[in-house]
Amino acid sequence: MTLEQVLQLAKQLSLSDKVRLIEQLAPEIQRELPPNDSQPRRSLWGLCSDLGTAPSSEEIDEARRDVWANFPREDI
Image (cartoon, rainbow, N blue to C red; front, top):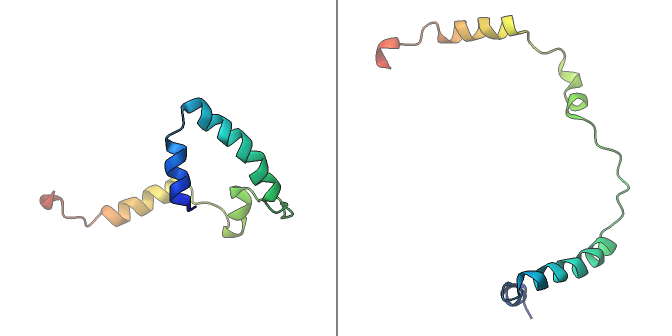
């Protein structure tokens, strides 16, 4: 039996039967998954720590003014 055939049969189940199917399959799938021995994930702040300090709002505003200074206003 193929996955597509199983999915077609599962779609024919009532809502309560679909829930029961998931409840029965989930623990089995969890047992088959490899153990999570990896290191804890770093926060996004930790991932960006090597980038240095963030630009200040004044620096961002200045960069915007520089970029948009020569924008042709008459084409808008």
